[in-house]
Image 1 (cartoon, rainbow, N blue to C red):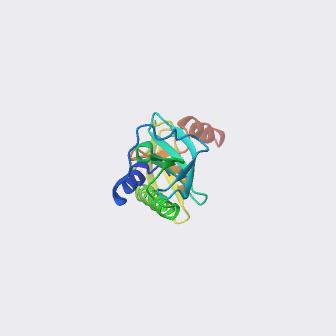
Image 2 (image 1 turned 90 degrees about the vertical axis):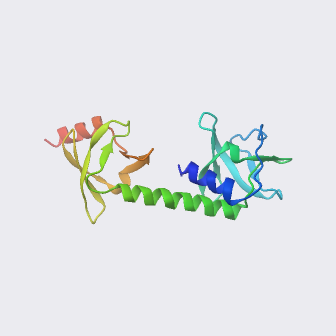
Image 3 (image 1 turned 180 degrees about the horizontal axis):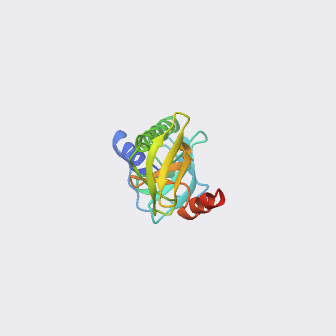
Length: 171
């Protein structure tokens, strides 16, 4: 869901004529987003003004879009896409993100902890989805689902302190 750039680019370039609004009719949590015909597209879940993004929920999927992709209508925030198209764009962004993460979980890749500190290097990925990391605190396994990509950096969803404490408890 954090494929903001992909989703924003898809909205801005795949659908010509997107309206760029200055005030965007206050996209705020709970506001409904409509398409140019006034049909419901999604509900705004949260807004991050600093990042210039909003999380929207279509009822089927949640995705992050740039505030700049919102236009304005008499009914409030508008996206120049239907609900079905937005669902497809969010799915494509999620798929791209999952593919990028899977491609990054391979031997010899550096792993950082949840705080961005060096944690170790992947030495093996098992057929059962376990990832062996040789790290600063020792050697340990994490499930493949215990990772995320942050700015092209592979991060484990644990801190170095947590790993150190777990390894010390096993001794």
